[in-house]
Picture (cartoon, rainbow, N blue to C red):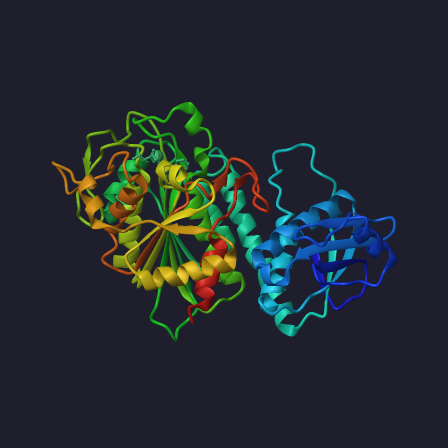
Length: 469
Ligand code: BES
Ligand code: MN
Ligand code: ZN
C-alpha cells in the first residue's frame, strides 16, 4: 500500500452520505433502482465503467471505527478486482476531527494488508494499491506517516504471536525484541537463567525451570522525555508456550498456547511504535519469558516458592503460571526500574473469555483516573476494554494456609482473583491490569481483525503515551 497526497489520479472513490447528492446518470440510476442506497458500509464497484461509490450512512452516526471497517472492506474489494490506484477526497465532518477521518480511512486500508503466510508455499500474487488522498491538510499528512509506523508495529506484534513455539521461545523472543528495538535507540537488556536466579526472581525461575528452552528476562528502556519524572512500566506476560505444567492442559486447549506471550508481544510492539514515531515519553518494558512445560525439573502443585518481593507463594495449580511470572516482573519494574505507574498485559485467564468473549479485554485498576485515561485512548484505538471490580473481598480466595499467598483462587471470579494476585506485587503504584486472554488471539476473523493474533492494545497504549506529555 502506498499513500500519496493531493494527486488526482486513479479510480475516483465517491464517499456518499445519506444526504449527499451527485449529478451523474450512473449514480441516479443506481439510487433509483435501489441498487445503492448510501447506507453505511455499502460499496458499489464497477471497474469497467470506472464507478466506485461508498456509503457512509448518516453523518451524525459515523464513527472512526466505522471508517476502519468500511475502508478495510473496500480495500478487499479493490484487491479482488486488482484495482491499482484510487483517489479519495477527504471529507470534512462536524463530529470527527481531521485526524480521526484520515486515521479511519488509512488504517482500514492498511488493515487489509496483514497476512500471516510465511509458511505457505503458495503465496498470493504481489499486489500493491496506490491511494491518493486529496484535500489533505499538513496535519493529516503527518498523521498518515505516523499511522503507517504504528500499524507496522501492530503487524510485528501479530507475527510474534502467530509464530508457534518452535520459532518463538524465550531466546528468540529476546532476540526479536533486540533486533527490532536496539536500532531505534531503545536500550534492550537480556538476562539468562543463572542471572534470573541470582537476581532473586524465584517465582519466575520456578515456572521456567521445567523447560529445556531456558528463560530470559527482557528489559526494554525507552527514555525520550527528560522534562518528565514519569516512567510507565509496560509489563507483558511472556509464556512462549503454556502446556499447563503438571496441572496439564487438555490437548485441545493446549494447541494455541503459543499465543500466551501475547502480552509480551504487545509490549514490544508498543515500544516499537513509540520509538519509530519518536514519541516524547519514558517507558520501561519488562518481559519474563519462559515456557510452562512438563519435565523432571518442573515446579509441582503443592510447591511453596519464593519471589523477588520476598513473599512466598503456594503453587495451587501449575497452570496458573502467568501471575507467578508477572509477580516478579511487576515487582522488578517498580523496585529496580523506578517506574511511577504500571500497566500489565496478559493472556491470563480462561475466565475472562467466559465473561467477555473475544470482544472485550478485562481490566482491573487501583487508580480510576489512570484507568480513565487509558479507556479514553482505547476509544481512539477502537479496542474495547471492560472494567471489573477491584474489590478486596475477593482477596480471601487467594489466601494460603501455608504461604503468604496462593496462585489460584479457584473458579469463581477467576479474572478478578488473578488480577488481585498481581496487585500484591506492585508496591501501591497506580496500576492497570489488562487480561487479553480473549482479545489477543481470535478463533475467527472479526471485521478488520484477522483470525489468530490481533496485536491488541498496541494502538491503545501508543495513544495513551502520546497524550502523556
Ligand atoms: N494461558 C492461560 C489462560 C488462557 C486461556 C489464555 C485461554 C488464552 C486462552 C493461563 O495460564 C491459564 O491456564 N489459566 C488458568 C488459571 C486457573 C488454573 C486458575 C485458567 O484460566 O484455566
Ligand atoms: Mn496456564
Ligand atoms: Zn498461561
